[in-house]
Length: 151
Image (tube, rainbow, N blue to C red; front, side):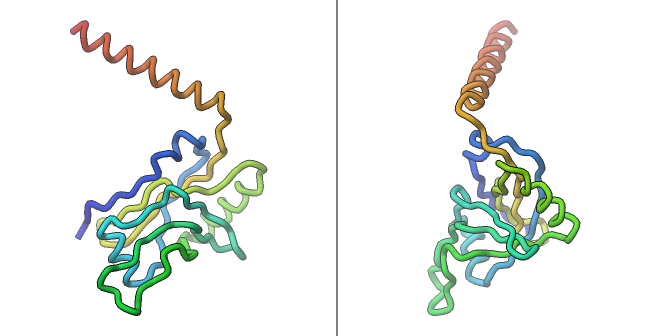
């Protein structure tokens, strides 16, 4: 039943340092899961917020299902993330710290057919941190090229 749906937030690793990651289920309508299975979703501008000890994902775009009719969903509504109480309390404690946020990193369909999302409690990077990451990536790439040419 597993599908090849994997929607990633490619900028997340560049923009944030991940403190801790979690896997959460998502509460969806029928037309939403059908659109996700057609790879018609985006999490690049999404973020998560705590509301009354529940976690919600905001600004996640799921395209309208073309065969939905008048039962279609709103494309950018708040969706509840499904985690157990221990994980929710951990996340709540972490985001009390100044500068930490919750961002989605990956949306996928699990082996039993459920829509799941990897989320990360993260701290935003400064400009000089981003430059440092680019430098280390370039150095590693250069070393790999020289080793490849050496063999």
